[in-house]
Length: 152
Image (cartoon, rainbow, N blue to C red; front, side):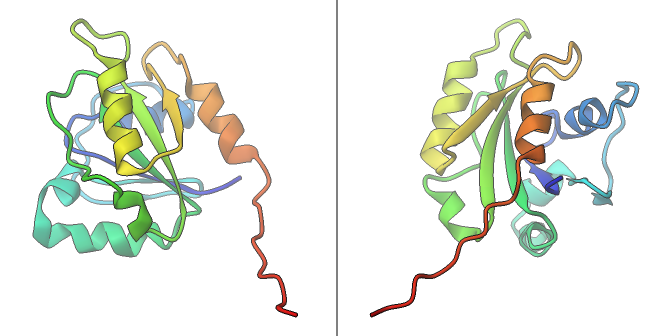
């Protein structure tokens, strides 16, 4: 299984998604520091929101096979600038959370993630489990080794 690091602003649903992916009981638990597990790396939102702490995200991204950028469907703005995914030499997926919340706008969150450079987008409701299996299936796909073709 590929290792996934979750990145996004505070309250975007990173820890709840981690709990859903790990089949744990869903409970609110504010992430104070980076939780490094066998398959998941959960990061505090403050690391994405604070310039001085962003370097930690860059370093921990090297410990993962896949970077998951989270945007809650309830957010009124995004932290991710256009084409940010080109800064990472890992697979990057977009994850839209809180899709069934009142006032949710999943299509806006998807637009932000696509502009950031995410080609593959997952829509999840971690509380009901909707979309969680799709992420697990993605993480269970075999890793694709990219090789350079010899020049003639």
